[in-house]
Amino acid sequence: MPPRPVALTIAGSDPSGGAGIQADLKTFHQFGVYGEAALTLLTVQNTTGVSAVHCLDPALVSAQIEAASSDIPPAAVKTGALGNATIIEAVAASLARLSSPLVLDPVMISKHGSPLLAPAAVDALRRHLIPRAFLLTPNVPEAAALAGLDLDAHATPASLREAVLRLSALGPANVLLKGGHLPGDPIDLLYHDGRFFEFPAARVPTSSTHGTGCSLSAALAALLARSFPLLDAVTAAKAWISRAIASHPALGHGAGPINHFAPTGL
Ligand code: PXL
View 1 (cartoon, helix red, strand yellow):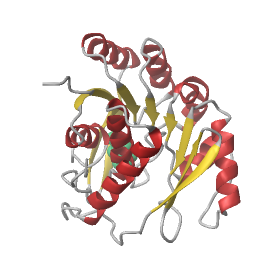
View 2 (tube, protein in one colour):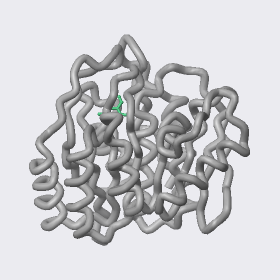
View 3 (tube, rainbow, N blue to C red):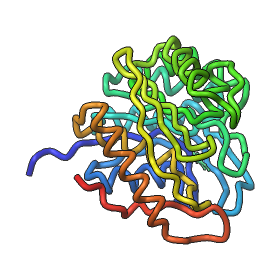
């Protein structure tokens, strides 16, 4: 048997299984990657909403990362919801000991509008973690908050590129701006090697998109763990996420999850 690639997620828990570490581990598994998970926070939620968020002790977050990674070193890491500035600093210190590529999904608010990152922590993200990222994967509201720009539904292609360039100046090796929050068919914009690449997709008319961002960044981490070049990883992860949304299992009474069983095509 060839060695199985390993990926580590550092993220929050969604007990309803659609987002957070639950989504990440399902995604790693679907891409044939062994998954490790260090928890940052617990949410109490289901598809109809979030009723509580509890951040863990930063020392406990670091201890999980160090226990897992010192024993079974991950070939790629992703971060999701981080909760607050002290957890971000703890994660950054733990990741300084690892050289694996980091996919940083700068999760700020849940689908239902609950904060998953304290507003004061945005600066900690900018200073401590974004410079270490191999790939930063904001959606449009997250890109606006990180870049200090006003991007709304009327954002132009030029303003989106400007936001990506500002994010790139914070130090990540690559930036993938996800266009799903804008009206019409979504176009994701990748900035890689000093060039822009567009990844258009057809919009699937459904509200069952809970966990889409988590699952996309987990798929990217899994593909990087499998040594896919970045452009191939983005193409394959996006094709899978589109299939996973289109074949959503219609679970729950609110914004339902995507279909993590969708074929990866790999
Ligand atoms: O999709 C963002 C996200 C990340 N992490 C957790 C979440 C959510 C959205 O609900 O619950 C734990």
